[in-house]
Image (tube, rainbow, N blue to C red; front, side, top):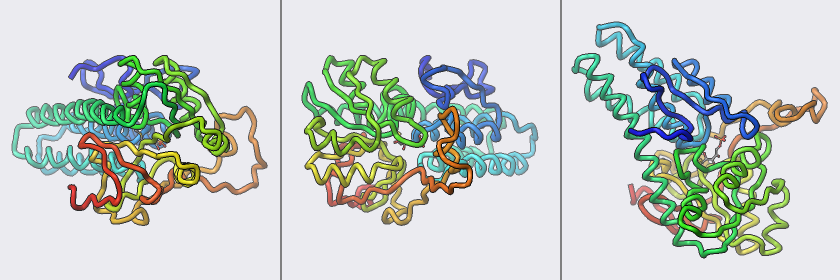
Length: 348
Ligand code: MRU
C-alpha cells in the first residue's frame, strides 16, 4: 500500500502507530498526530480528530493491527482476549457510522480465521487486511464518483453538507468525490457549502478541500439553504452518509433531513453517496439507527472565542439525523446508482 501525504490516516513507516491529520485544527493548522494504542485511537475518534464514516473505519482497521502488535503474550487465548477487549473499545467509540463496527468486525473475522498461525504471521495478515480496507476505500470512492459524474453536466452547481471528501475517506471522498474527480478531468463545477453547525465541518473542511482543488466554492450558513434552492442556484444536493437502513432511510450529519425536505419542496434532486458497506440491513428502517448525542458545549463554546449563550442554558446536540427514503432521489455506491423504492435486503 502506497500512502499519500494527504491521506487522513495511514501507518507510520515502522508500522507502530497511526498517523492522522488532526481535523479539529483545520484549516488553520495542519498537524499530524500519532495514535499508538486503543485509548489514543478512541480519543481521536470521539473528539473528531479523525472523522467521517469511511475514515473512522480505516482508522479502526489500522487500530486493530496496532493493538495486536502491542500484545506481548504468546498464549493464543490471552492474545485473543486482549485483542477483543481493544476491538470492543474501538468499535464503541462512536455509534452511528456503521463503517466503524464493520471494519472492526472484518478485522476480527480475519484474526479468528488465522487464529492458529504463529503470532508474527497473524500480525502481518492483520496489517495486510487493514491496508486492503484502506485501498478498497480509495477505489470504491473513485468508482462511485465516476457514477456521480453521469448525474452532472459541466458547469453544474451542487449544495453539500458536512464534509464527505478526502478527509472523511481517502483521496476522493463520497459526497464530494464527483466534484474532486470532475475537477481532475477538467469539469467546471460550483459548490455551495453549508457551514454545518455546530462543528463546522463544511466551513472548516469542505470549503478548504474544494477550494484547494480549484473548485469554485461559496460558503453559506446552514439557514441559507432554502434561499439558495429557491433562487435556482443549485442543480442538486450531494451528501455522504453514516448508515443506510434496508429500506433506504439514511443517517447523515444533523441537518441533512432538513435539506432533503427543502430539496423536495424546490424540486432539487438529493443524492446520497456511500460505499455499499455503509448499507446495514440489520437496520430495517431509520428508527433502528442509533443517533449519537454529543456535549452541548460544542454548540455554545467550540470554535467561539467566548461562550455564545449563558452557561446555564441546556443544549440538544444530536450529531446526525435520519432522512426518510422517500426524500432521497438516489443512493450512489460503487455498485451503481440505486433509485427508490429501495430494498437493500434484496441487493445484499
Ligand atoms: O461527525 P462527522 O464529522 O464524523 O460526520 C460526518 C458525516 O456526517 C459525513 O457526511 C459522513 O460520515 C459521510 S463521510 C464520507
